[in-house]
Structures are given as C-alpha cells and as structure tokens.
Length: 334
Image (tube, rainbow, N blue to C red; front, side, top):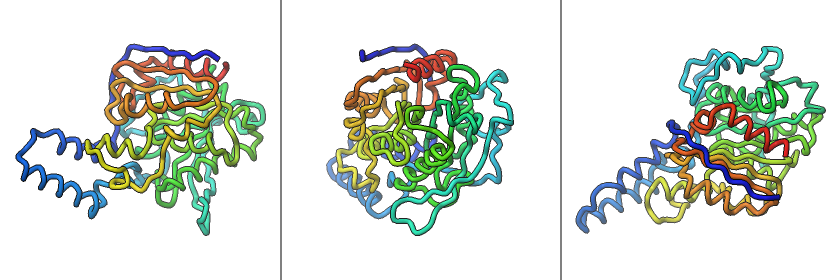
C-alpha cells in the first residue's frame, strides 16, 4: 500500500503532567554559570534524581485524579481539552458503565477497574469497535468528549467505543503501574471478546500515555490482535521522555524504571498504522517522539497527519472535528 502524508493547518493547548518535567528544562535553560557553580548545579540535580522521588518519571507519567464519587460525563465541569456541541450527544441507552477485573502477571488477586462502553452491547458481535486508551490526566470524565467524538466516526454510533480508567485513575482501584496499564486494557479486550468481538473488527486508538498499551498489545497481543491501530501524540520511549524533560544526556535509568519503548515496539508491528501529532506539542515533541515512532514503523501501510500549531491536547479541535472524523473513518474503512 502507498504511504500517505497530509499537513493540516490549525493551532494550540496545555496538558498537565508536563510541569514536573519542565523543572529540568528551567534548570538547564539558564545562562551558563562559572565552572564551580556548574559542578554544584549538576550535583544538586543528580542528588535530586537519585534520592528524591518528586522528579522521577515513574510517578510523574501518571497524573490521575481519584477525588470523584461518580462519573459526570456530559455534566462534568472540570478542565477539558474541548467540549462538543449538542449534535454530538449520545442517548443514555447507549452509554454503559460497569466494572472489570484486571490481573497483571504475578499478581495474587485482581484489581477492580471502571469502564464505559458507548454503543449497543448486542451489536459487538457484528460491529467494529474502537478501543480508546486515554492519556495520563485525571480520569474518564476528562476524556469523555474524545470518546464521544469517536462514537461519531462514519456516522453517529456506527462503531462502538470502549474506554477504561486504568488502575489508580478515577473510580478504578489499585495503583498505576506499567504492567497494570497493559493488564487493564487487556481486561477490556477480554470483555469485548466475551461479547463477540473478533480481532478483525478491533481498532486500537491510543492518545499520549495511552499509546503505550496500544503498541504493547498490538505488538504482543493477549486476548485480541487488532486489525489496525491509531496513535495520537505518541511518545517514543520513557528514556526519550526523561532526556527531553531533563535536558541532560544521561541514561534514562537515572530518571525512571519504566521500560515503555513505543519506538522499538512499532518496528515489528504489521497492522496498518495512522499517526496524528501536533507540530507545536509542548509535552511530547513531534520531532523527538512522534517522528521517531513513525519512522520506525515496519509494517505494510502507514499514514501521517501533522497538525500545524496544535499543542498536546488540541489535535481533533485544530484539525476541525469533521475533518478529524473523516480521517479516522477513511483509515478504518481502507
């Protein structure tokens, strides 16, 4: 299949989670001091990394909120990347909230996580389903508008959309972890499989941190192997994120124990790949993250959508919702 590149003109937003990494950028961007001061600064930075958890990427990657008693969805009044108008509303009868049991390898008991399915559960036996893996911020209320938008790909409620809160996020129990991330998404895929979904009708969509479970479970499938995958604002690896954030040329192990490496995973993925990324992404730089992932892909078909002037959470809005939906729909139906 031919490769496709599009360049779309649009603009900008902020994502929480970047602030802690920016501590490093501030320190490394100041005017160069004398030799003694430079040595002292480096020592302070190293000690901060080695003896303090506040600047380690392991915890800063996860930025959950658990101070809710229920999901508000359309009534959520907190911060959101964008809010859709009434034409994108979903009937209550097609919004299903429920719990799943997730158990990572080596765990003695399962963790209860929360999930939302948009669409007819009976229709899972015949419909295409988009497994949406959200980013590192807050909980499903923050991402509800995004899931709702995806429920309009190829027409209102044409495809089902599955979304979960990873352990430690929202009303999901447990503590966020890399293995937990993969286990939680796979628990959702197990549920979809039990309700009749086959891999040929599964589309995996990951945004930001959510690109990690998409790459992992597409490259090394557990319950289902997806037909295609979409990455919006992916990060290349935990190492690159650490080095970008610190401005220091040091091994990533100084900053994190995470093994996430999307840029390596995509080398052996064969399924068709769609990449979307804002050119002004101030959290996951398009050059050091997205372009690397796109270049490393080793499969049969890929297409890129670089959105001019869009920051980390702005891609759908800056593309224009209709244009965004058309791009996702066309890719799925190829």
